[in-house]
Length: 181
Image 1 (cartoon, one colour):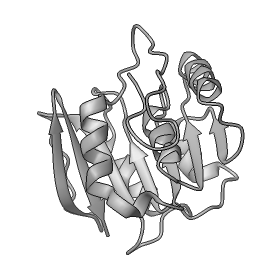
Image 2 (cartoon, rainbow, N blue to C red):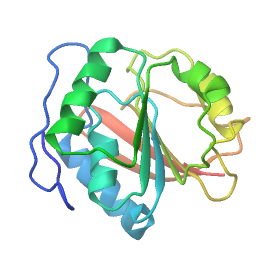
Image 3 (cartoon, one colour):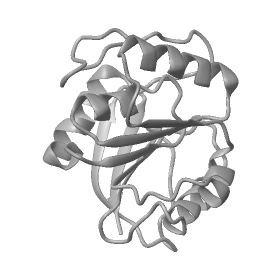
């Protein structure tokens, strides 16, 4: 696993063997190609950060600020190692809360231009998660891009949500749904 482009291009990231499933290099490359220039000077939330690969790729490509959150201590330790490997000191925050709790109660009050969600494949609360995202002060209707990585056979019901899928990216066993309100 490596950073694909930008100022950290080619940096190898530490991978965790076990429960953390990072977004593949190929799928990350497709994601950032789809996002294009919107990454420059953006503010990101990487909600289930894991290794931090997606948020670090955003920083590498010119994001102004990335908020990383993962409730798992092993994931946060891995994230810290990867931040250090890239020499990242400024422009980041790290949190260790449950995703729903973070969205409801964190003291982060920046409106995010990009919100990346990569919950475990067996995550049972996609509807609740997405409703909480769009009700959060981090989300701005009409301008925040929400990206949800899921197992390719997972069905996500957006019926009661003010989100529309703009693009679906495929890679291996994963899909990334790129959505806006």
